[in-house]
Length: 405
Image (cartoon, rainbow, N blue to C red):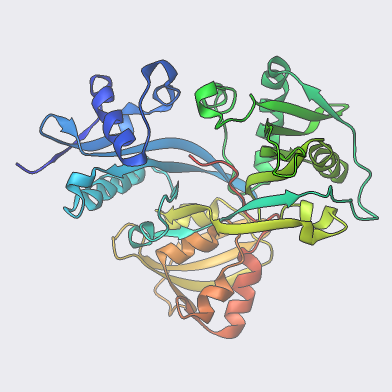
């Protein structure tokens, strides 16, 4: 009997999470379950076979920051198929049901982090952000001359972090395309939860902030792991999980605080923007090494609503044709884009730009990708139109999603 696709109920949860752990390599512990409080049961689904689940898919209803605005987003998550049921069409069936659900919720975009980067282009997702793992090794690097004077950072305890971080983050994320609103449940289960079993040998979360007259203007969340090197000297690791600031002095102050920890041989910062300020802060930028991968992927579901939800770096007027083989967002649209907003209307005119829906997703958040996509033939357009559209869609700051969902 073929596996049956169904919506998840709370009674299904233990079997649902069993397949999730099987495919993602976890051991489920109900006493340490910080995922269940966040799962939107009415939007989760999976296939059942033989009395258990053999696939899973979930959705987070996100408020996503885009250039100059916010948009509702279906956050695709926990997509898995059991090894016993691969290559049987289960993923295709789940993704169709999921995209139907996003459309029915009037969410102009869907987004995800891909465990394997080859998978989701065929479902219309495009690489909308890049993500860097930055490593800085001893000797302790010096800050460049001329950078803003580092503001003093102050270490705080968890109870103060729970008070001051959420309002700062909610303001900061509105200025950064690719970030999304954290609900109180999200803060509790994803950020402030600090189970020893999930620390990978590091300490508990540590926190430091840059104070201002109106709360804080930056914070860092990090952990430390003590180690001894082969030469008998300390060779610990400091791992930065979040570091945000709103001023030049805040950026230099937080990075200066991090890099001045003694007994550390390697500083690691994960899920950073490839344009992280550290490269301009250091006198020797080569001290910081970055490995850059794809970050968040975006799937445009409603081109008109999505494009009108953001603003643009410069004016652009033209006609685009969106190719969508799955049928959710195809069409030809006349665009009138500007720093003040956008007007997008269906059109019967000849298109100036022809592109797949995945590549519209790739440029939607402001990532400077249009010229590169055209260079390899994925986007078709005249060179002068390309220059104008490239300027309009690009954004500062470049899109960055610092958290996997």
